[in-house]
Length: 125
Image (tube, rainbow, N blue to C red; front, side, top):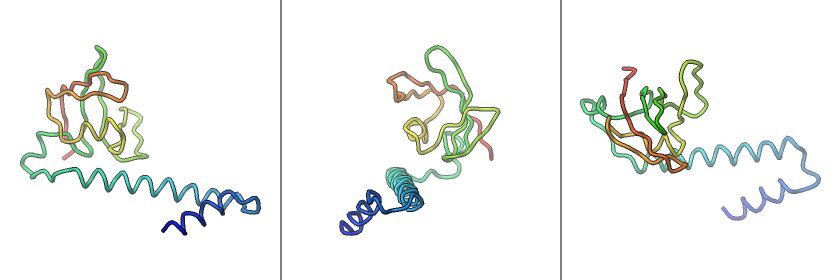
């Protein structure tokens, strides 16, 4: 494995390597990082029984949160998901990982140290 990483590093820094090779290697590293994040997320989560699922935040949940005295509605979804009507928080993000599995009334600490209180959860199913 180290030989492959060394080779990849040498290719990326080689003056003779074309920009398309460098871009492909950069993309590969980005995807490897995302895969590691997902594996880590799955490794640390306990499956939720179906009847309990509607009590906690999950992928696809719309959540009303309160932070710094302001309430806002967000949706918890996958990386790259866009919604023009509501702010999207990626399930892979720091805050997304903190929110999954939480219930109304619980509070998490945001990346900037601010308290984020869960006020309401809506489910798409």
